[in-house]
Amino acid sequence: MKKSFNTTRILQNIFRIVLGAFMLYAGIGHLSFLRTEFQAQVPTWITTDKGFMDFIVVASGVVEILFGALMIYGGKLKVKTGIALAIFYILIFPGNINQYVNEIDSFGLDTDWQRLIRLIFQPVLIIWALWSTGALNYLLTKKKNNNT
Image (cartoon, rainbow, N blue to C red; front, side, top):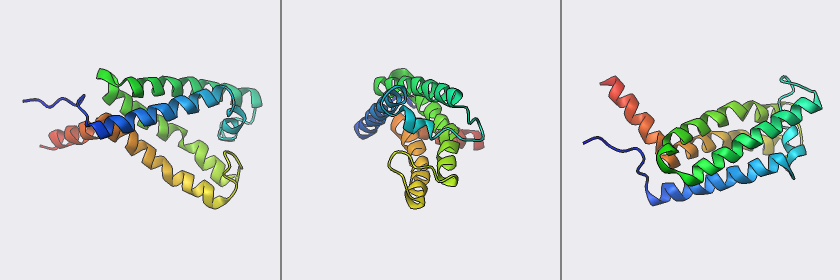
């Protein structure tokens, strides 16, 4: 009998919905009340142009709103959504590194220690996205099946 990866436990669903709500909040923040804070996250090696920084913030905000909605909805797309969100977290990680390396104060992170803690939290978000959607189990099973 083939296992369905769309089946997740209640605790996973709760964590998936909470992460989805967080993504909606962050996405809305990108477009409005946290826009300046998020501009500080754009790596300076990508651009220092304020207009392009704003474009990146707005575009990533739209993406985060979509991820939030998909995480809350769940459904048949939740495994793919979890994998895509984990990849998104990896892609935005350079912004957190940029904030740490360049000692940029943003989101109340005004010490190196606070910015370092944020770096450590990024892998937690990646695992959270994968686990709460059943994607982690899917990927581990796929790897196991490929090795046999």
